[in-house]
Image (tube, rainbow, N blue to C red; front, side):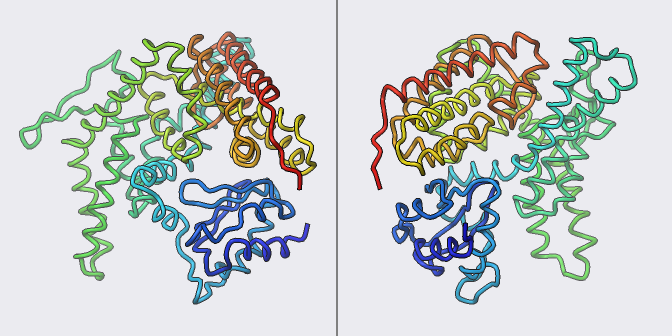
Length: 462
């Protein structure tokens, strides 16, 4: 594949370099913000060598190249469009800011949450996998729970959840335009050792401090999400406003000092307790729906999740899932999302067998297996949406799989992993939990595969 040639042709089909505002890439896709999407020749782009699909979503036009290829296309593309060199006619801008400018308020809010929580996923996944390993070590008696190795791994596995406010503080401060290290300090204040860890409330009650005619509970915020987000947002407002009025000569001394003091008091007097109530309320509401709607909740959520993926809002669910883990110790939403994801893979696999065009087969098979590992964008945008029927079949498969995992109360102890890898974070809740999860996946894949075969696809020969 000639990456330079592909980049040059892609630039032309995007309406020229003047139409490209910014560009970046993830593991599989070139993600672009353009001035006018009407100038894009989408069909011609999809026929370029190496391109596995193209779609518009969440204010971005995205071109799927696949793992290993996208980064090799990005470099010549950045040169071709002038984004790398800072061409005067093509001044580079922050990609995230360019994306947000193209979004409606709800989409911007979802994008903000996504930007905060996606960088934290590796830490949560690592902790979840370690908990899964500990669960297997205990279940299969690979190690004595009182042994040094078990106790060390136990400390490692809980660390990310204990310091979650610090992790969120750093990430949120970056997103809100504040100093990430001040965000870390605020997160650290919220889990200070002098505050009672809420996980120990069954054994002890918090002490109270009387300040400004308010009784303040000396209760920590370990594992919480919403209180930290609200607090760091206020911290960034305080910091940015101070920098506007404080002279540069004393900014380094005054701004951080005042920011920490003001935010600290506001946190414990108002924002923290309010955020805790809000977070608990959301968790309780979801749990009520989960407990009382039963499999209907799984049916609706599992069927609708693929539609939510189209909007890009799904990344904002990480905040809700993190709150569930803190409040009840179980993430029962992730298995539902997983059913939707693997169902898309099942439909994509059926397309592979139905397709006559070599390019379609070339895209469908790896995209389907990617979905089984939890990455659905290639199969959704590159295969299933193109033919519509497979996407509908996957929604039905995801709905039935979602209904089953809710009915059998499948849960995970982390977030960020779906598909086959999620087995590792389902394991801590027992063998039956894993068995039910696998059965749910088989239902979702089988239903979507069979329905796609029945619906067939209308393939245009080229």
